[in-house]
Image (tube, rainbow, N blue to C red; front, side):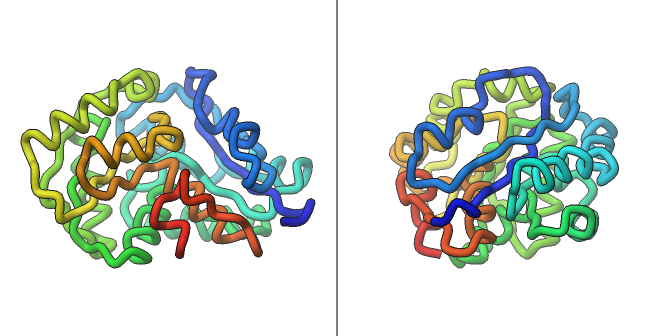
Length: 242
């Protein structure tokens, strides 16, 4: 990697100050330089709040600072819910408009899930969603629009991002697997508020199958957009080869 390799991460500024993104670059030396931009948010998992959070006019100013002041060569809008809430067409429009404003390659967590599933050849998944039922249904619809069917899903009904962040995700995976033991499909865990990169291998062991998480696919999709960016298998799992 060269000094020019710099990945910008746009993250909702919704309360918790210990998200794994904050210390990721210090813990994973093989990664390029990571710079964070914070987007004002109350963290509410409600459709109207998420549509407002995902508005390009709200995302563009911190994104522009990542590019112009911090030198980001690629930017990821690292928020699952505020990148799928308006549907697949809305998500593509969001990315296209941000790319036009920022002048660098851009993607989002929701689109990264579709890209990652396509790379690994999966079109059927199970879903462990931290969101309330109405937001979970929108995610299922988004995945369906992208050609991915959800077989089994569970909504944890976390009203705010801080609730997702506090969830015992390993225990929730155990409960999900007890109810749905079929291991032929990957298990999706959305929401970048859930720290999963350092627990990916533990999640896979508990699930007994491949697990794909919001932070995993966000990091992978961002690195893909940097020329020559390293893709550490410990963080990315099988996506490291794609």
